Length: 522
Image (tube, rainbow, N blue to C red):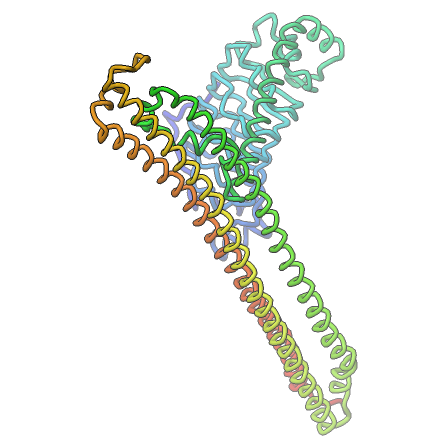
C-alpha cells in the first residue's frame, strides 16, 4: 500500500529542492527569477514536490500565497509544517506512509484533500476544514464503518473516496455511507443514484433521525454558548462584565470562612437574603448605566471620525483641483518645449513650467499644513471630550459603588447587633438554636465574635474596592488608547500625504529634466 524508504535515501524539503522544483515548474518566469535572485516565492501559488523521496515536510513557510501543493508519492510519515499555508485550497498527500491525520488545523480554506494510499486507521482532527468538498482516503487502514459519521460535519462535502479500506467489505457499506452522508454526489468514483439514496434513507431513517436530533441539540448549545460569549465581550468593552447578576456579591463571600460561620447565627440568613437582593439591584443599575455610557462613548468616537473624514474629503478635493488646474494649464507645455524653434524659446518655456511646478508644490504643501493644523485642533478637542467623558463616567461609577459600600456597612452594623445579642443569650444559656461547634467557638467573648465579623466585613469592602478599581483602570486605558489612536492616525496620514506630494513633484521635475536634454527642433 505504501512505500518503504529502507532502500531509498530519504530527503527533507530544503531550499535546494524547492528552487529546483520552481525552476522545473515555471521555466520561463518565476523559475528564472528564482534562479537569478534567490528564493522569494510569495508569487508562487502552486508547488509540485512529487516523487522526491521526501521523508519530512519542512521549509514551506515562505509560500504564504500557495493554493495548491502536491506532496504525493513520497515517504512522508507525518503531516506537519503546513500551518503557514493558510490559503491552501488543494493538498495531495497520497502514496505516503502517514498514519495519523493531524497538522491541518490552519488550512481552513482547503477544499480538496487526498490522503489516498497511506496507513491511516481513523478519520479525525479535521474539524476546521469546513470548506472541504472533495476527500480521498481510499487504500488506508480504516476498519470501523461508524468512523464515517465524523464526515457529517463537512456540509460542503460532495465527493468521497473510501475504496480499498477494510470497512468497504462490510455488506452495509454503501447504504450506510449514503445514509449518513446524504449530500454526497460521488462515492468511490461513482455517481450516487436516486435509488441508492432512497434505499439508504429507508434502511437507516430511525438512526439518522435520532442523530440529527442530537446534532441539532449540540448546535443549539454551541450557538447559545457563542451568544453568551459575544455578550460577555460586549459587556467587557463597557467595563461592566458580570455585574448583571449576583457575581460580585457571591465573589465577596467566596472562600470567606468567617462569614460562613456567622451565617449560622439566628436571623442572619434572612438578613443575608435582604442584603443580597438590595446589592444585586445596585449592581444591575451599574450594569445598565455602563452599557448606556458605552453607547454614548462609541457615538462620540464615531462623530469625531465623521468630522475628520469630512474635513479630509474637502481637503482631497481641493488638492485634486489644484493638480487638475496645473495639468490643464500645462497640457501642451511639454510639446511646446520639444517643438520650440530655438533654444531661447525652449528655455523660456522650461522656466515657465519650472515656476509653475514650484507654485503647485507650494500650494499643495500649504494646503497640507492647513489640514494638518485643522486635524490637530480636531484631535485636541477630541482628547478634551474624551477626558470629560471618562471623568464623568468615573464620578458616576464612584457614586454607584458607594451605594454598594453603604449597603455593606449597614449590613455589617445589623450583623454586629445580631452577634452581640446572640452572645448575650449564649452567656445566659437562653439560645434556642443548636449552633455548630465552630460557631459556638466564636461566642466565647465579645472581642472574638466582633473580630470575626470585622475581618469578614473588611474582605467584602476590599472586593468592592477592587471591582471599582478595575472599572477605573479600564476606563483610563480606553481613554488613552482612543486618543492616542486619533493622534497617530493623523501622524501617519500627514507623513503619507507629504510623501505623495513630493513623489508627484519629483515626477514632474524629472519629466522637465528629460526635456532639457533634448535639442530644440529646427
